[in-house]
Image: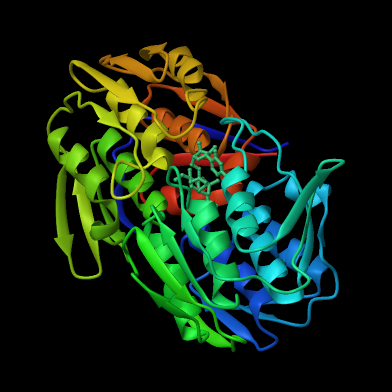
Length: 416
Ligand code: UD1
């Protein structure tokens, strides 16, 4: 199993080009199930999670062919089952449920089960589809869903914000009979990207970018070509890399508007962010100050940036508090950061961080995708050498990590 070895202490300088967003690409790829025509997705990163989604779509009969930085999706649905072996690797596999039901009136999708950052049920996805007329039963670890008469438009009010449920219902409603309204829908930029692509495919959707989406179902959707938006979490992560090493990085293709809450917390911590054409620059000349943050649905501070921001706070002056409100078990990076000399205590859903002057290299273990980059950040700032094992987590969602970081001066290598 690969690990990553980093010798810390080098301020990173130069340019990092931000890749297409993983969390936008996943639902966009499932749009390949919504039409017999060809769907072309541009600005696609090379990531393990997207390869997993390509495997899954292949099982359903949709071929996914890479063409440079694009993916070309096409084919007819031949199989309604999303098997456990693929779904267990990636929870986002459940996003095939809505499209399959809408398109062929049946789906059998393995239940995703728990994951390292919490139980993460899919009840909102199922209730939404039931409100649209689907019959759903759970049996032997599978969701068996059918809608022999087709899905019908419905008024759906989500009790809390779910990105995945909003996406699944959006896609299903695009081909349902009648009008669906989604209230308390997620407003993440990845949802806006999905809506933009669906509209390009012929869907009728209003309320883009708001928490109320109105979808008038159409009989069929056609092919389209859509360029995926830049990854805001990759952007924020490399912004933390510039800040924690006291460096100066230009983040090319990055969109500051998608990261408002993160950038304002970073500015408060003493980091300088300057918007330029086609991206923004992040630098730090002076010390970091502790800042409190709380994760929230967009436009709040994203849970997917919580761990990386905590690495920054670990070396900031003074104390800070990071509160996680989206997932119940998302502090697994804390013991690993503490092994590197951080002083962090967890109390329920909050972590109290007492900044230390310096971290020190140590052997550590990645526990989930974002936590794994948190350890990379800590290692970049630490004195001495850090070896991070279980880096397959990193490969799920960050493209060409070693190349991007080494290109800016980091001493980093992958060890087999
Ligand atoms: C997506 C992102 C993930 C991000 C998360 C929150 C993708 C592929 N993944 O995950 O990186 O961390 O949004 O921004 O885009 N919940 C339920 N019932 C449901 C659905 C969700 O209880 O039916 C709960 C979850 O357990 C969690 C919260 O709602 O506590 C938010 O989850 P959700 O927004 O659905 O996250 P994902 O779509 O899984």
